Length: 345
Ligand code: GDP
Ligand code: MN
Image (cartoon, rainbow, N blue to C red; front, side):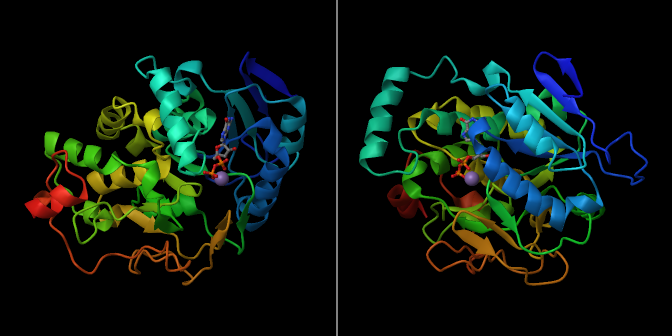
């Protein structure tokens, strides 16, 4: 280990990092990896792809985060997989542990029910800690304080093709806030009340949004579409904005990150729907990418926002911009789900 900055931060200077002869005017950006020690082989797999297809040209630094201290093995192997600077840090407990207002007995009962219904990660506590962390906390980590952009990298993903330009610079040049590669549908039973709570927020704060229509179906319900956040390149300024924070707090207070199983992907996407415009979103459709069993191949040679947000992955989960344009302001925000929304429209 090169040196220890604080009891919970280990830093390795890479040969092509900040203090090397490699001269490239990088954006203030980093690759953010949340990982468990047990996932080291899967992370190495992702890093190999990511370095070969993209980062070997730019040497953006990595920041690894974990709720438990990284092992020497994890740090030795992953820092050897890149020439960039690499930092490892612990997540503050208050960013990871369930908040005190959540009733753990009620959580247990709810999780049993989710499991019975066969919901993926239905009774997992750590999975919920992870998605809540990704929804409302990772960008508050002190190591990210001076950064403008992040690129989230997950274990066991593929990057199929060379990414021959600096995506961070492209984000900045095009003044983009959020970039995605796959747009697909969430499992409805993980987010029974996320949509209602999003509408309550929109009404309460009088949000007038044009992008939210991307997430609305013909019956004014949530169409379940979301940017798949295991790939995510975005502006930290946006996540740190008062708006985003107030939306996160509004959602968090319901306790439903725990009582239900709200994913960070639909949360980020609906926040984008509330606060961003289509021009702020970059569909990086020139990136070949796989996570789990979903993949996409590049269509164009250059990223564009002209194409439909069409991830070309199978009809059941594929999302496209709905033809029918819905005025978001006509969506009722009262307690109703689908049926009451229908009767109001
Ligand atoms: P999925 O993609 O939704 O199936 O979920 P993953 O298992 O891939 O988890 C998403 C990300 O969070 C991955 O980068 C995992 O390494 C990380 N992760 C999930 N659970 C934990 C956890 O309990 N601790 C830590 N440190 N990382 C976790
Ligand atoms: Mn994953």
